[in-house]
Amino acid sequence: MSYPADGAGPYRSMVAVGDSFTEGMCDELLPDGEFRGWADRVAERLAADAPGEFRYANLAVRGKLIGQIVDEQVDVAAAMGAELVTLAGGLNDVLRPGCDVAAVCAQLGAAAEKLASGSRQLVMFHSTDPSRRLAGSARLLPAILQLREFVAELGTRPEIAVVDLFEAACFDDPRLWADDRLHLSAEGHRRVAEAVLQAMGHPASFDWRAPLPAVAPPGRLQKLRADLRWLGKHLGPWVMRRLTGRSSGDGRAPKRPELARFR
Image (cartoon, rainbow, N blue to C red; front, side, top):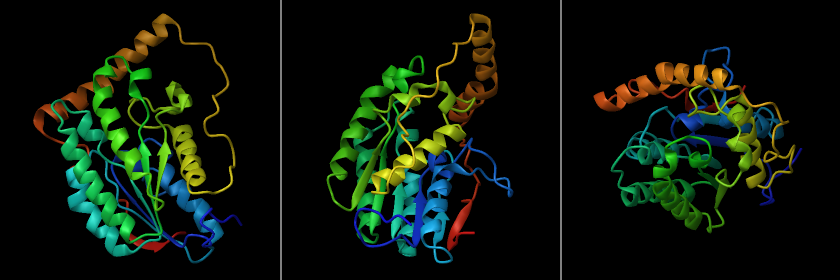
């Protein structure tokens, strides 16, 4: 059994708040058809330290903007009184043209304040750097850096731990990403789960920043076919949702809406 660095013993409850990143999109599927995801993987590890006692909720829903996360998830999560809370949000906002980053930071900060005040530990994130792997994404970097700076300031508080994925070069590897190039693969989720646990003070199980074994890059024809498949299957539908004001999470309920015993 391994205890976190605060010396207060194992966590007995956890609630995860956010969007598709926290919902677990594109990880392996569970028997009920839901994605597993890094948050479920963290819960599995924590449940092993508190067998029969650990409770877990995951309120995250794909496509949610920070305002929706605040309105639909934060009060619910705060009322649960979980010892560990994870909060990730704002990236869907900065992906949109004309985003008011200051307003996003204000909402994220208010959410962090509410969740941290009622928990033993709040975990937040610096997103990965898309400019190193996605063509045309450099225009997003100023907004992402502004959000990153704000979260870093929140992370100076002892009750808030920040997981820094931005500087981890391993996430430049396409094998850590799903076919849609926006969501993590199973290996990506496995590494984020380990990064969260280490940020909380748990001993390392492996080096989550380590690069994957080298492989030959795809040939030009193979890359062209992959790009065309991505344009048709993923980018096109994403653009249509933006144009019509729809979201992939519209009408979708959280996969674990209650703080219930895990397993």
